[in-house]
Structure formats: structure tokens, C-alpha cells
Length: 317
Image 1 (spheres, rainbow, N blue to C red):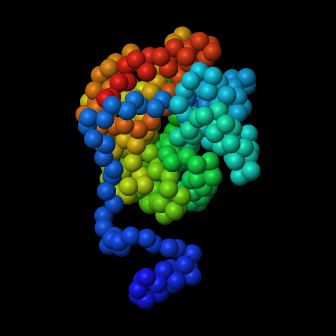
Image 2 (image 1 turned 45 degrees about the vertical axis):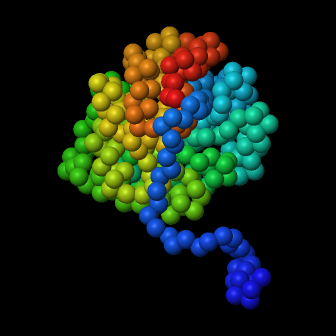
Image 3 (image 1 turned 180 degrees about the vertical axis):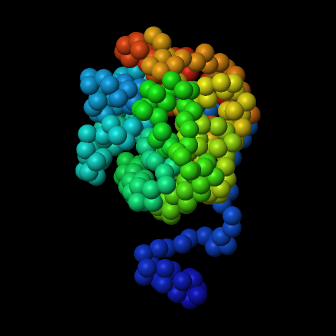
């Protein structure tokens, strides 16, 4: 080994890093691509929300949801953050170990935040919460975290928001233009932690400023970072969903798929999953799909049926 190389490795080891191979100058980060002839099946995960649905105490335990996902032969699990019984890191390691023993990935972490508010202190608190969630996802080994803009809060409750098809008035004296600035600024504050933790935030098309594809794109492109992309929820565009899904699919790093057996909790959509698969295929999507069951049927029958539906129709190859 020549002296120059020996000196380089010695210096690198002194700071805890050894670099092997050619040193390449840093450049713009490029998104990975999957060859279009790939025939890998999409991996389908179960959202713990599918069982709990904010109302079913029998499925509040994330551990139980993990075990059922394994029994029903899902590939992975998407954990709803507010469903955690504790938020300390030893508990998270127990969940990670349980999923590993069951042969499951933990691929998604679904979180809530509200950046759409004129209250600067509230925005700051929500940024801090989102950063904490990114660190939780990192501790769980989860690479993707669902995020939202939040809503204006002018609806009485979520049922009222759904009764109005997700449309809500802006508060008196406020505008969406202000809202976009707040939301973009808040996500920008979260980017350094997302990059440090290796957790890609996925802005979901989910009410607030994310209710329309134009809103989703304005936020994602306004932040302009590979660490903020899109969680594409196929059931959250209530009218004419396919063109809207087409508009955001190029940024999708995670897909949420909904089913409504027994009738929807708030609404039902007759989704054409073969058509949705074609949209994902056009945009070369080969990532995870999370099942979010939003029906009233018993999950013990509805969730396995939903998995069979997705496996039979979301064929991307």
C-alpha cells in the first residue's frame, strides 16, 4: 500500500469513517429507477388502522395487529402512530422485534400534523411533533412516513368534514396562499431530520391543502426535496379519482389502497383497481401498498378478502 493511501485510511479511521473505492463528487440526488420489465410483485402491507379504525378496542394493540398481519400472509405492516400504546423507544424496539420474528417488514408510519394554522406556536409544536415521529420511524426501521398538511379546523369534527366531502371554508381573514407558505415552511424545517434518519415523508392527498392534486404538487414541489414525496391514497379523491391519481403518481413513494366491505365508515368508492394498477405501471411504481380497510364488516373476514382483491388486481409487472 502506498504512503498516500495509507495516510488517507488512517485519517478516515480516526474520525470513525473508512471510505473504500473511488471518491465521487457529490451531485444532485437522483431517484432510483426500476427497469420497466421488472416482474417483482408489489408488496402489500396491512395498516394497523384497518383493524382499530379509532373505535374498535379489540384491535388497539399494535402487537395483535402485527400477529394478525402475519397470520393473513401480508408482507408488511404500516403502523398508525396515534395507535401506539407507549411512545418510548424501548417499546418501539419490542414492536420491531415482533415484526421481525413474524417475518414482516415495517414499511410505513402514518402520522398526523397540523401546519395549516395562523398560530405560529401551534405550527412550531407540530413541527417538533413531526420531527419526533421521524425519529420514532427511524427507531422502528421504517423508511416511509405519511404526513399531512392538516385542515383549517373550521369543521365541527371529522364527521362534519366528511359530510361536506372534505371541503371546508378558510377562517375569516385568512387565505390558502398564507396556508401554503406556512405548510411549506414547516415541512422545510423537518427535512434535515428526515434526511438524517433516512425516512422519506410522503404527503398524503388527504383534506386541507392536500385535498386536490394541485395542492399536493404545490407543497411537494415548493419544498423541492427528495425527502418529501407523496403518499398516494387511492380513496381520498372522492370525485373523478383516476386523472387526479395520475397527476400525483410520479411522486409516489407509498400507495394506500382502500376497501369498503360492509359499507364505508364515512363513504364508499367503487374503485377500479385494474385501472389504478395501470396508472402505477405507467409511472414505474414498484413500492409498497398499504391496505386501509374502511368498511363496517368484521375485519376478520373483510381484511383477508381485501388482501385477495389487491393481490389479484394490483399486478404491476
